[in-house]
Image (cartoon, rainbow, N blue to C red; front, side, top):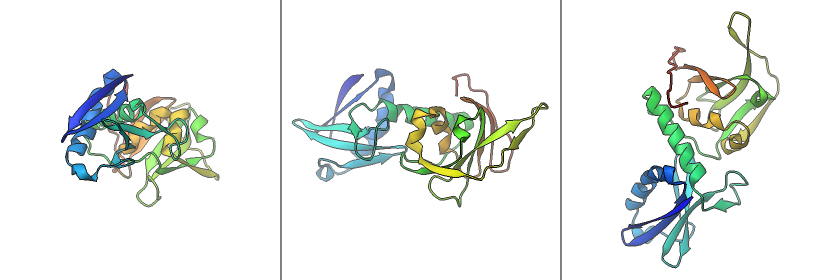
Length: 210
């Protein structure tokens, strides 16, 4: 992790992140440039996609920190922006692969999960416009000997926050910027199908590993 300083409108902003992800901080700096300097104060928040960036006043300006998604983001913070900027990169790359605008989600948006689905080998994710929260529902599916998928009937569903996937299925977060009515099928941590709002397969081979 490396610390970077950037002076914007006469104010020094400091952040810490893995060097390979520093370029992902540029949208944050661009957002800061559009905000009147007099607006900044300790605890000021800037929301960009999944993350909320928080200004913490120091002797020379502000440190940029984020909620700690590996602990409790509602009460804990960290000055390491690596996770936030990694998620941003993953989501941007995924949308670019499919040439889509996408719809952002925030770390504290809720998702609906069928009981035990996150432990299943095959799962489907579908985004519903009328579900509430993020709109995402995760369910287990099964594959027969002919390779045909079918739903596994579920009667029990839970809700959780999107950030909680980081500890159990982090690979799912990148697809959650897809628009309503899209469906994604995973086999373990690999995407094996993407269906658009017309139920048409648009799966792409990603040489980068997405």
